[in-house]
Image (tube, rainbow, N blue to C red; front, side, top):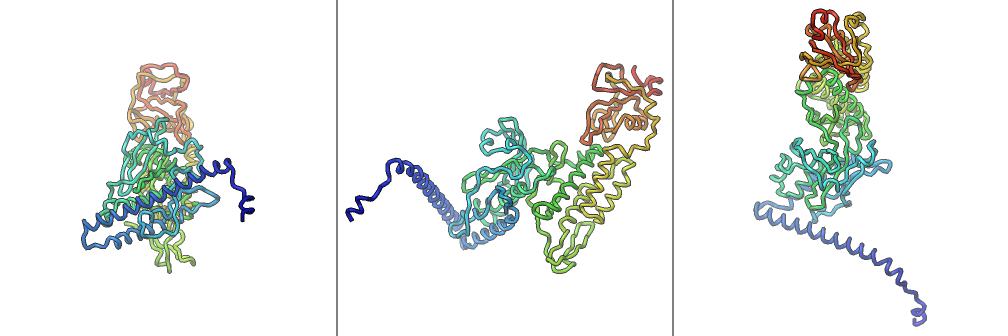
Length: 499
């Protein structure tokens, strides 16, 4: 024994010093876990005492079990969405809600990530906003609130403007939960699942017509407030959109169709927007973008027979077929397409459409109203209208002699203008319309009795068409290398041009 002890080697000072930091970190981690468990156990006991004092005769544990069951259901709802593939780093929410209820043993627990990088994003890394950047933010506008969430506009110190979406603690969902369960922490966790689901969907579904997720945060308090960091947009205003030029309204409808085509074959499968309303969208630099996805589903309805596959709307009903898999396949796509027709196409597409494009537009309207075509055929029809309108093929029958009625003066612009208003115009102060060429502008001026001249500058719309300004007259011309002025010869002879 003595010999064995004498030959035993003990670690030297260098190894001891190397292990000391590791031991300290491990000890600190154990202390944090222990304190967290004690704090949440204390919270649970406190909630039980408060509940008993306010609601005598009501079993606190049974109420908590009901709340826990609802939390489990919300958790299972988003499981299909956050299963990552190809090593994607997705937000992990699984199991953590049970940490608020020490009496219930979870199957597994994970920590919330404080900061996440967006997966598969086309944006450069510098566009990703970290939680630490929100410390010195300035709230500049209130964008809106609903049953569950609140959205504010925020300016960051680096000049970036973003939108922050968080839980509405005064909203209907939170109020109803508190009335039923009397547990602020548990209700906050329950209501938060809609925003968690939305964050995960924004990570998985990336498209030009879906708002970009720039990051997300969650604080470490027991109530665990979660915040989504989004690119900033303006709420869609349908009344304002109805007063805009047809080209802009067509852009919105085209964006809807392109979005629905993507959702029909997304990485998650066919996705249906169960709450399909204009209020679910925002405008970002003229582009329509979906911003609310908490009511989206990637599961086709279950069925046993064809009669189970039934879509009911206020003014129209549709039937589908039950597949061998027991699913109403194609029902999600049908739901999305008809909602697009009744909320967008019906109001935005037909009115003020170019006369030569009207037959194609009418075909789209009739097809989507009866769901005679799927989303692939609908997208093809929209892209055909877009191509014809952008290329000017619908203007081939314009009389070539119209432009000869105008005198063109390059390198000048008009001053002392006498403007008139037309509808719909890109300017509320005058008549500004998009044209494919000077020939189309001449045809428009010819159709306006008050028009005597028009000017073209190198300003273009999203389709590449020029913006033309139409006027009743002007007093003189000034040098301007970016402008061309066209004056109607007959009007000029009558004093309608330069005065």
